[in-house]
Length: 247
Image (cartoon, rainbow, N blue to C red; front, side, top):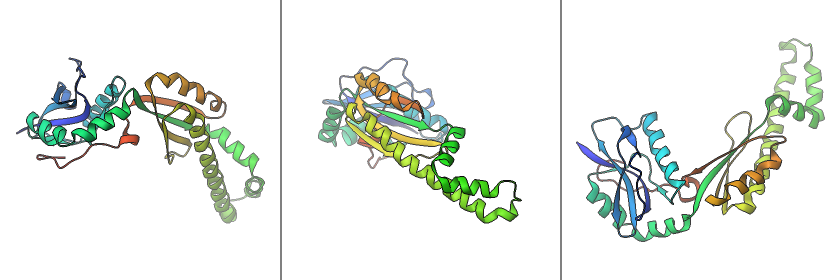
């Protein structure tokens, strides 16, 4: 059984690179409906869907597209019966909504800023900045672990609290640094132990250099990476609907 896998919604005047590939290395095609279109590929429904390779292929196509044209991401796993269903059940049904969203994204993309602490430097700064932490460290020095259990627990809690407070400050510092050159900013909770900030911005494609310069002042104390351009997941979400085959 075959179906049509849908990746994203784009303006109808977009041309597809002949080398573009999607899930299972399938060639990418475009289904047009009035002023909008969908990026699709044929899919064998007997194959499992949802491998890491599938997820990477889905995201890579959308991000590569976002570097050139506005694109509305479609939720991973969306499949329709055929290309006619893509045109009628997806594009025609949501024509005005998609057209407006694409207009708002014209010339823009998402960028992600990932900032990390240098582990040794972070601990030194935390200890130097909090006398209580310094006293607790001194209190457990050269003492057996069991004999200083209470102090060790208190020290760990104090260090974690200090790092979390620092994360909040640094997340705001990153967001404030890029806000003047971005259309919108979304902050996320950093996930890793030494992550300082994780911030998404929506910005004009021609302002990538401005974003890099805006972050330059933070590089003295943070390891900062700017990723993008990417599809604007954090600003338009992803398109979903009741697929007649699978979603």
